[in-house]
Image (cartoon, rainbow, N blue to C red):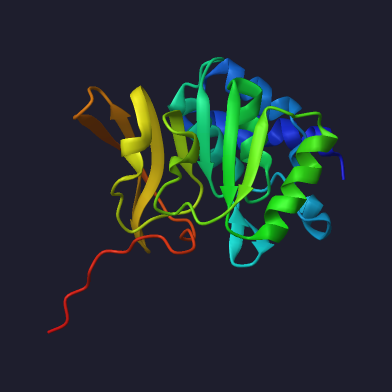
Length: 216
């Protein structure tokens, strides 16, 4: 497989056409080898417009969604980022290329260990990987300038409280098949601005909060 041609096609045919026009993001997606972060047996699917299973009930998001997330968060060089769900480590790497430091928490030890090897292979050393359940937040290194949830959550409560002033949180909220990508920005100590961006559907984070269901 011609990975370079496949990468070019991914950027031009999937990512650019999905309203991702930030040149820094496009350049990053064009240079970071996505094929190195997918399971070896699925390398030929690295640039396909689909979710790639990682085992343990986890999945790697489609490339255009990863690109849209990075563009939406407008990450600055001094930002401290919390990633909830390390997964393959690819989004971790994208975030780390732009931010000062990324704290990435994964509930499955095997996925965290695999991501550590991949990040090290690409000399990405401004990442702290931790194993734990961060589905409802991770206060250990707060406050954060950016928080990203890589799996969906039924409801979003409390996690945004660990944002610094001006901090941004990206989450996909809802239950299948009705989920919406949401950007939450901390505008004052006590106020947040919420923007619904687009509809999509991805697997839930393990132990993510779900809305209460009424039984009649």
